[in-house]
Image 1: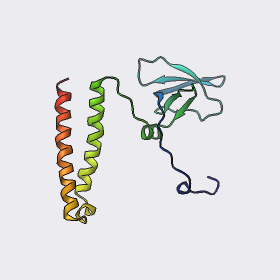
Image 2: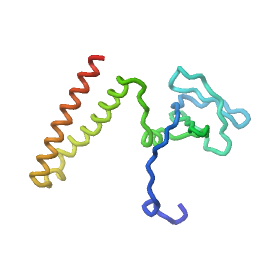
Image 3: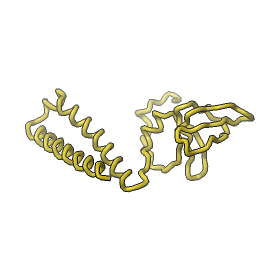
Length: 148
């Protein structure tokens, strides 16, 4: 990066809304376009221009921005930067539980670490209470989901 390290550059967090489909297959190429087939079979294959961009690969995302700019993104980069917007309240509750479960897993792992053991007894107590509350919250969300 022109001699500069990433740590010297300003850091930005994405706040854009985009539309995207995960690519199942990159098909034939014709006149600077490729035929994309998507994992979500509700969407028909689409011919997309690939001039002046890297050619997409299966597993990548086809992304459309609100200014109608189209691009491709490797799956890991896309999934690290974007979260699927839930459509119904049930989807939102499921997404909330998934998000909570990920955080809970991290806190449980931390709770068993040597770093946790090095904290003051007061901080360990706060984190233990946080863990219990998060477990109860996750249980309530699971019950709600089971009753949809």
